[in-house]
Amino acid sequence: MPSNAKYHYDVIIFALFFVLLSTWSINLPSGSNWRPATAIFIAGIFILPTSLTPLVALPGLILITALDRKPLWAYALTLGHVALGLYIGSAVFWLLAPTGLMHFPRAFFAAVVTLCVHIIVNRFIAAANLAYQRRKPLLRQIAAITREVNWGHVNGHLMGLVIAVMYYMEGFWGFSLAALLLVGMYKSASYYNHMYAWQKAAQTDGLTEVGNRTAWEAFYAKLKTRPINGTLIMIDLDNFKTINDNMGHSVGDVVLKEVGIILRSNVRKSDKIFRYGGDEFILFFPHEREDDGWVAERVNTITSEIRQKCKTYSYGAGASVGTAFLSAEVNNVDEILALADARMYKAKHMRKEVQAPNC
Image (tube, rainbow, N blue to C red; front, top):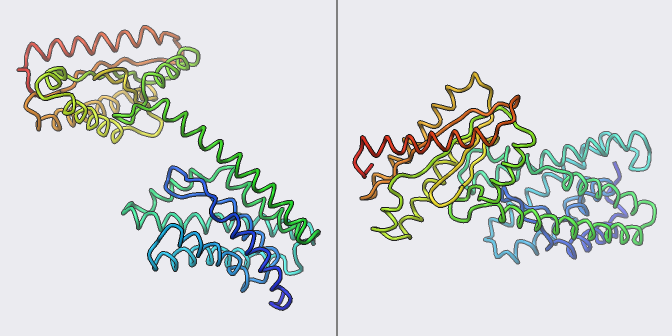
């Protein structure tokens, strides 16, 4: 491991570039964010002694925290988060490659292991922090953040290694060229992130936060070309028009929002939910034929929760349901959808015959 002597110039260069890029970030769905400037202090892992590595990020992190107008405790949390990840990463690298960066292949192996360790440590600390702030289970937050570890993160960390190599070989100018490439990566990732957000918004119902009619049409077309085993479920709210007519559309919107919450809380990640139109919803549960009992239980839970929720309204909006199993071996999606729809209307007719208008 190198000594601290003669590294003050390097610390200043790395810290300066980090400050210049530190305010750029891309927000991710889990609540965390990705900053391209991260690659700069990662590069310091491979150049600087372990004790100096955290200093690279210090000025930029103070600037970020100040601009966000965070309380004083946030400074310690942010600095501690980054410093711990850098210190552990640097310690691992110099342990595995005590002779330095350019002694391949040993240094390359050490660098890859170091990047993996840094990602794991950094993501775990971020998950613990978000879990505490949002009062969510730690394992659930870890799962959310882990799903966001993609090629963007990997490329950002690999770019840190590239910056270190460029600086090792060409000094300031090599570092500057690598920094320009980092700016290009950020611009591309930012554009992709915005496109993803726009695409998601275009296929999400703004009121219930489930898939909208456009999303259903796309999924329906996919099912027709590549059918899979599963159950199509049609759900229609009973007496919903009565609520709109007697209590106003604002109350009707509240009912639809609550139904959306119930539906989203009773499905798996692989299941699909769509608002087909008005007060009608379509669900698709992929499963094998022998799991029909589980589907029936889940549907009963959903309808029971909807009816329980609507008891708070004078004109209850129960739910009529129709289901039909789709086989991947028989390309009959249109028939299955029509069957589920017919069963749903039959259930609605029977409920009207045996029940009063209210839930």
